[in-house]
Image (cartoon, rainbow, N blue to C red; front, side, top):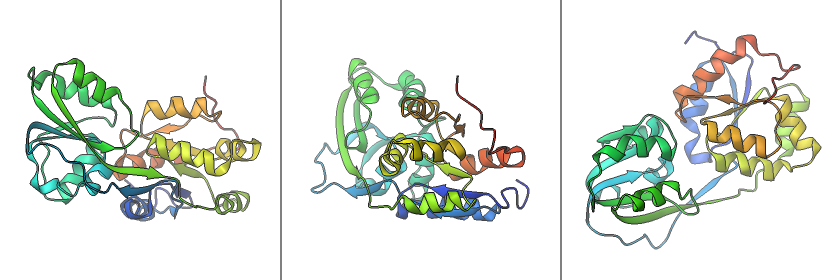
Length: 257
């Protein structure tokens, strides 16, 4: 990526405070002006879920699941990660994933792991509370012996949306990164679903990590088509913005069909 590829681009990062530094650093290294505005707060679940000691496969559904799993280094089994960002989180903890799904969705993990799953395989799903049920339901239909460890929960932080509104009105906000559906849904809750909140998100470029997030944006009433990165990693999100920024036309946003 060319140095200064995002020069002058004001970007809001909606990740929780403890997980935003890598992305903010990558944005600033590319010349962007990065502002952390967390729309999710991650809390570890206490007491820790009690599950069996050994499994054929241990699936981590997100980087947050890795960070909040107090038993990470004591688990026994082959590790599968949803997406490169989750695999990178494991690597930072000194754990190597035996399988990394190329995308950040459950569908990608099922396609990659499915052929390697034996009937009655023992599988542990390390995830958050109130997550998607697709992966859990699909694994059970394949006849595996499934356990689930919900190691974290998401809450709505007390972030003040006036910070975003002021930055937007001053011309300093050009893009907002929501790398999870929960982050996007909470952003809308904080902004409000009225004309002002929708106007802000139609005026700036929303950046997401999956087509599933594009569908959610449409359901929430956002007209401007989101920019879709290959995955939720800092490298992929920054690269997507760097491709867009040189030809950005904030006054003529594209529209979703």
